[in-house]
Length: 125
Image: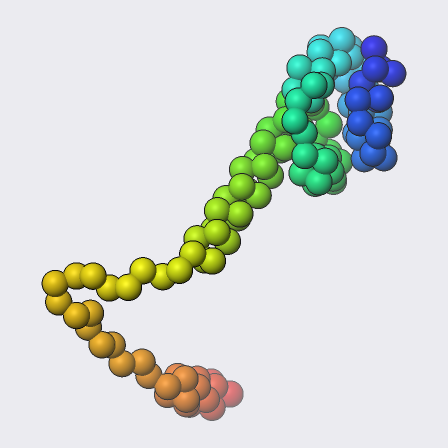
């Protein structure tokens, strides 16, 4: 069983994680084995996300396959969200199409705020 799990992925982090898992949960090796197989075998696993999740679990000493699965899912969602945000940023900004033209808002120069900070720093010293 252990050999089968160790051979699921080739990365060094996978081997380190699996060995730590077996060492941490010696009474539940079979359960951990089944979880590892269920969560990661024959799935479309993105190796860069898996490596990140493995490192996180190793660094935070959370060597169960359930924790690894949750961490992998978190990093996968985070990556998908960041891709969506980048796509939105790249999309062209629609032109205003309302009934009234938009308000023009003036912006203060940064020098106004920098002057306030300098005055504040001078008073605090």
